[in-house]
Image (cartoon, rainbow, N blue to C red; front, side):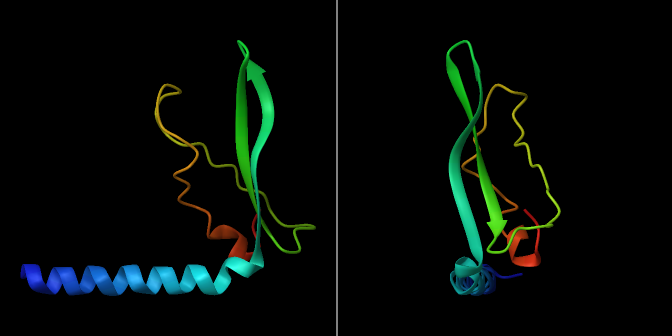
Length: 87
């Protein structure tokens, strides 16, 4: 695929994702930095993404990669799940 077409396609996809995210953001409740443990005086935290009405919703636990040495919870690739009723 020519470079110019790739750029246009990439811009279109990014635009669609941004539109979808902004349209559905009101249907999601996000609670950031919930401390679930402390190891060697270091706080371990999680972020919770829920649908507005989470009662009875199935729970998905996502653990980022990095072999417990690197990586971050800030790069969450499943933050769209609450739109479909998952916590």
